[in-house]
Length: 116
Length: 112
Image 1: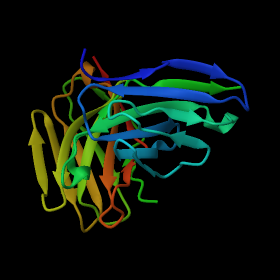
Image 2: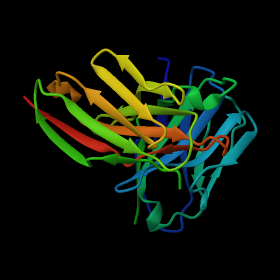
Image 3: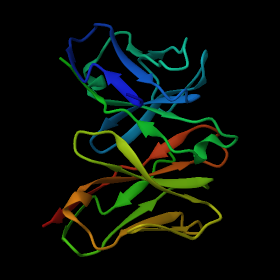
């Protein structure tokens, strides 16, 4: 089915471990985003990508790494997970427009990550 | 931070009543969007209003934007139990390119 999917939906890991969250979209949207959602903070942008092989930092990038070798995939890696990275992570995508911020973002269902 | 703030944080109303929630932001914007999030789900886009617009309608939704006060409101008329969700405003920032900021959300409960 078309859409944007995330995996895994739930993940429990331990401090110091590397974790990769996957995001896949079938629309061939140029832009993809990673957000984290925490109580009291709303959604905060971690990283975004304007196209394959083009990524840029958002508001809270520290401790995270992204890559985008293919348009449809945008994995997020926590190189050494910390408890403060316990959160719900959302991936989103949007079409490329001349003023991208006017475009609707389509969100995945989220990944709930717990770091013990 | 450009992050918007919604007010109130939580709102509980009876079915059929109108629900109003507000969003304030800090710096000049190009556009403001409202999203809805049902419990345990991702966000769904509701409506976009551009900085040169003052009011916009979509079905039972009415959005206003006052750029002089750096605020927006979302009105849901004739609410239904299915409108129970969290509502977020999202803004870009006029001079910071691709940053995109969400507020902290208003949790709306519509009682049948």
